[in-house]
Every structure is written in C-alpha cells, then in structure tokens.
Length: 161
Image (cartoon, rainbow, N blue to C red):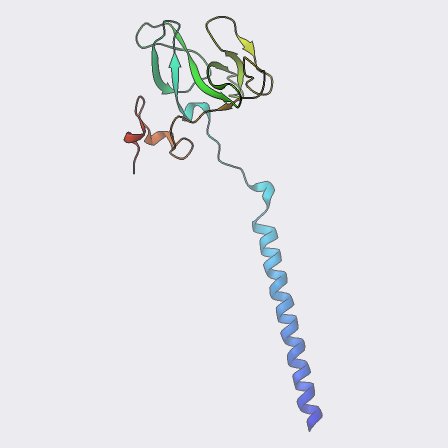
C-alpha cells in the first residue's frame, strides 16, 4: 500500500514538472513572437514637426515650423534661415545658422557669423576649437511637448499644464 501512494506522488510530481515546463515554454514563445526588436520603429519628429527660430539677413527673428528650405521673413520678405544655439563644452553657447538637406532633414551647411557657409559632415563643429557641439535646449520642456500644443512665438508659460 505504501508503494501505491509513492507512485501517485511521483506521477503528480512528473505532471507538475511537465505543466511548469509547458508554461515556461509558452511564455518564452509568446515573448519571442510578439516582442521582436526588429519590428519596433521608434517615433521620430521631422523638421516640419518642430517650431524653430528663424533669422533673415536684415536681423529680424521669428518662430515658425521648420523647413529645409529658406522661408520669407514676415517683416522684410528676405529669405530667412533656421538659427539654433549650440553649446561647445569649452567655449559655451554659439548661435549657428543652419541649412538642412530636404531629402534627409539633416544639417548640410552652417554659418557662424555673416559670411560664408561651412559644410557639415558628421556633426556641428565649434568655430574656435573644432570640437563637436550639441544643441542647447530652449526650455526645460523641449522634446517632451508635441509641437501641435506649442504656439509660434510662445514661451513655456503657453504650454499646457
């Protein structure tokens, strides 16, 4: 009689082990099927999604949605370019006029002061030391608030709370 009880316990252990293995296998299979990294496409903003600062040769500044091409200044109708403040770790903030490639939306040329344009290969170089510069944030909310909720010419007080 003791043997019958032990064989039932062994059968129960084997069944429990098989159920656990099947559950683990189904979890792994579900993760493998529904969570493939190569299918995930990150959300990216295009240049047209962002409100940027523009400046014309006459010195007028205004804010509007970004474009790869120059747009006319609302004051004097001269072609205006996008102006971005970049920060060099050694020399501090530098205001840079930027031209973008219409196809890729990446910077192609920069202008540090009125004068000639400098071609950009990989990153925006500092005009003093040539080191890579990074964009300086305009507000603490940059990159967090969709441009549809921002007003042209507005400031952080205009953002939804």
